[in-house]
Image 1 (cartoon, rainbow, N blue to C red):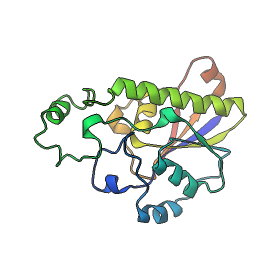
Image 2: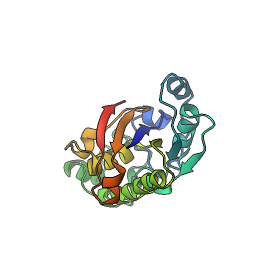
Image 3: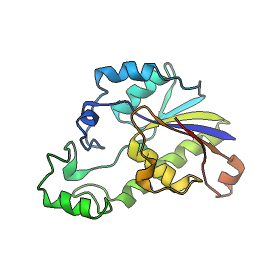
Image 4: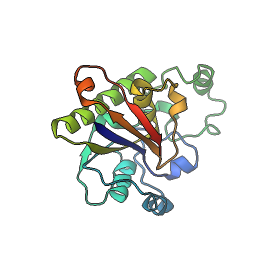
Length: 197
C-alpha cells in the first residue's frame, strides 16, 4: 500500500488577515509559523512533493529537513484573479464578489481560474506525485500543498463522500490517506482516509 500525508502549508500573514492568497501571491510563512510547525510530529517519509510556492517549500523544509523536494507546479493554489490578496472586508461592495458569494463559490474567479480548471490542474499534479511514488517503489510520502489543493484532491478521490468545502483543514494540518497501487494502476483511483491530522 502507498500511504500519503497531505499537509497544508504553515500560516502566512495573508492567512492571518483572511485574505485570498493564491497562485499570484508568493508570500513566505509568518515568523511564528516556523515554531508552530517545528512542534508537529510527522513520520519520516521517503519522498516529499510540494507546490512551488515559497510557503509550501518553507513548510516542507521545516517538517522534513534535509529531504529533497519534488516540486510539482500543478499543485499550486488557485488563481483568485481580482480577489487575490484581498479579504471579504476589502471586497465588500464589489459586485463580482457578491455574485461569486451568491453562487456558493461556484462561479469562476473574475480574471482567475474556475473551480473546474483549478481542480483539473491539482488532480493532474496529484497524479504526477502518485505515479512518481509508484515508479520509485515509495510506500510513504508527503505532499506539502495548499488548503484548496487538498480540498480538490480529497473531493475527487476520497472514499468518504464530502463536498469540497467540507475537506477544509487549518494551516499545518491535513490528512493521512492510503492508496492500493494495483487498483490505482487499473484506473480504480480512490484514497482511503486513515485519519485527519
